[in-house]
Image (cartoon, rainbow, N blue to C red; front, side):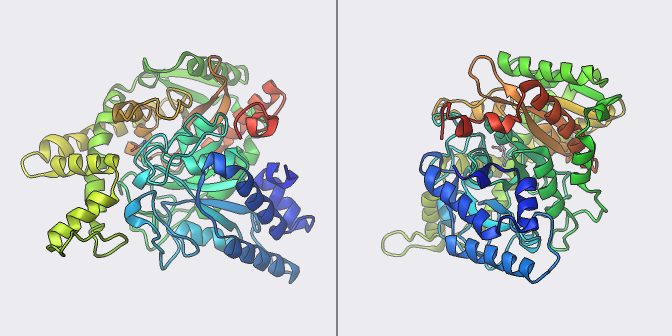
Length: 507
Ligand code: GLN
C-alpha cells in the first residue's frame, strides 16, 4: 500500500505544501488505490483520471510559480453523486439521470476546486439520497470496508466507504436525515452535518429542501473541519444560505486537541435517544465514552425531550412531501431518461413510462406517500401536523441547550448490518435514523466520530454530538478532544485500526 493514502488530509497537505510530494503523486496514489480495491468496495460511480490528473498538474504548476494556495491545495477529494459537477456524470444514484452531465459545478465543488482540492470521483449513494444502507442505489450497493458483507450506511455510503478504505482522504456528502453522520458511524469515519444554511445547497440535487445540508467527511475531526472551512459561507445562489461570519472550524479542532478543554463542558444525554433498539455493544461504547468525558471534568446531564419520539414519524411525512415536489422535474422532458411507449403515446404516457422505468421502489414509495400527504383534505392532517411536531422538537432542543453546551448520543442505534439483512423492509432502515433525524428537523449542526467497536461484532460505533445552530465550532472542539482520548485509550488513532490497514478483514 502506498504510504500517501494513509496520511491524514492535514499531513498530506503539509507534504504537498513543502514540496516533498506533488499533487500529481498524491492523486495518482489514490486513483491506484481505487483501481485496486473499488471492485470489492464499490464506493465510486465515476472517476475521470485525465481530468483529475490535469487538475493536480495545474496545482503543482501554480505552486511552482510561487502562487499562494489554500491549506488543502493538491489534496484529493471524493464527491457524493448528489452534487452536480462538470467533470463527470451526476446521477444522484438514479437510472433516471444515468449519464447526466451538468453544465455547472455545485457551489461546494466550485469552492473546493478554488481551494485547490482535486476531485477524484463521484461516490455511490441511495437513489436521490433515500436510504440508510446505500442498498437503494440504482447502480448496486457499496460494501463496508470493515466487513465487505456489511452495508456502509446511507445514503452517503459511497463517500464514507471511500474514506474508510483509503481511496480518498476527504469526501463531500449530504445529510437530510443522517446521510453523512450515520455512514460515518457505520464505517468508523468522521462526518459533519453543518447548521442548516451554513453550507450552500446550490447544485445539490434536492431531496427535501428544508432538511438537506451538504457537509464534509474524513477520517479525523481536524480533516473534517478543514474541509468544512473550505465549503462554508454565503452563496447568493441559495436563498436559504446564511450570511454569517463563521469562525474557523479547523482552529476549533486544533484548540480541542488538548482534552483539558473538556473541563466544565456540560454534555446532555437525551433519554428519548437511548431507545430500546440500541444494540448492547453500541450502548456500552457510548457509556465508556461518557466515562472518558467525566474523567476530564465534563458534566453529564440527563435531558428530557418528550417530542423526539415523534421525530421519525414527522420526518417521514415532511421528507416525502418535499421530495414528491422536488422530483416532479424528472418528467422525461427536462432531464435524463425518456422512455416512449410503443407507437409513440401521449405526453402523460411517456412521462409515466419514463418514471416507471427510471425510478426505484423506495423513490416511488416516497413520491406516492408525499403526494398523498400534500393532497387537498389531507394536507392539514399529515403535512400540517408533522410541521407542528417539528416546532415542538425545536423547542425541546431549545430547552436542552438552556441546560447543556452539547448533546451526545450514539450516532446510530446499531452497527453495520449485513447486506440484504433488512430484506427490503423500509421500516427497519427508517428506524436506524431515529438518532440523527432530530438535528435535521431543528436545523442544528451534528458531528459523528468513532469511539470504538461493539463487543458483539467488532464493528465501529459512532458518537454523535449536537450543538445549537451556528455553534458548529463547539462540535469540532469537543470532537477533537474526544478523538484524542479514544486514541490514547487504544494506543492508536481509530482509523489506524481499520481492517483495510491491519488486514484483519474487508478490503
Ligand atoms: N436515511 C434517511 C432517509 O432515508 C437519510 C436520508 C439523507 O440524509 N439523505 O431519508
